[in-house]
Image (cartoon, rainbow, N blue to C red; front, side, top):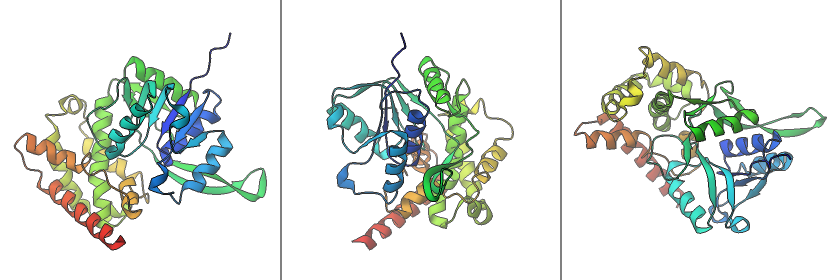
Amino acid sequence: MRAELPSVLVVGGGRVGTYVACKFKGAGTTGEVVLKGSPADRGVSKMQPFVDAMCRDAGVTFVRGYERFANRVFDFTFVSVKTYDLANVRAELDAHNITSGITILVHNGIVAPLFENSVRVVIPQSYDFVEEDDPRDATKKVTKIHVKNEEKPWVMPDTGDARKVELLLEASGIKGKADSNFPYGLIRKFFINGVANLLSIVGDCDCDGLLAKHRGRMEVLYSEFIEVLKHPHADAFALVPDDFHAVVFDGLASYGQHFPSTKMDFDAGRALETDSLNGYVVGQAKRQGMAATENEKLVNEVLNLVAERDARKK
């Protein structure tokens, strides 16, 4: 008798959430796949037509509320939202009594865990919606997500639940790796995001522009990261290679003309993940009686820019 295919709930209808929902369903190795977008009262993103088209083609169920799925147990719940929304996601799932065998978390930065049986995943990719010619009909277009660094695996801790996630990803055509070196992968990704994401807002530029015009400031941020995080994340720093500095800046260079997700959020008028990025470093510094002057300055600059942006909308 054939085993029932796993059900998947994907929370977060942005680029990453849409990509994985369609990969899960399109591979034919999952059963029901539900993609939960933002509530209707938040408005409709200009990307929604792309999301709708991809979900329709893949057979993914797109919803904005959980009413139809109250009291459900999903085999996997994949959460890809901004860190400031994680508590809201947990509260909304609890309100509808929706539970999961394993919760997969993909987000920038570092935050305290909010979900039981969760697996944190670090992804080295960037994602963008694109329209391409339909190979079946030259007069039509098809919507796809272009993935930068798609050949690199999603990395997660080497645990039993993570190995189940790895199997799900690999069966769906997404490279995954349950790795005992995960703490290093997490801190590596944090460093790349930390020297780039908020600074790209202040500099109003892509990754290439950051390296060309703001390298000196990035170096100061990097140095503060090292001093502040080496004790709280001693397990990760024990795995850091001698050429870690090159690893971080070469990793950033691989994104080329891509704009960091936080910069795109700022330009779109959305809230930002300051507390889980450079704000996290500032918080860790204060807990240790240390200074993180450049990081604190950057956070304040970005908060001021957000306030000015939002004031213009009123």
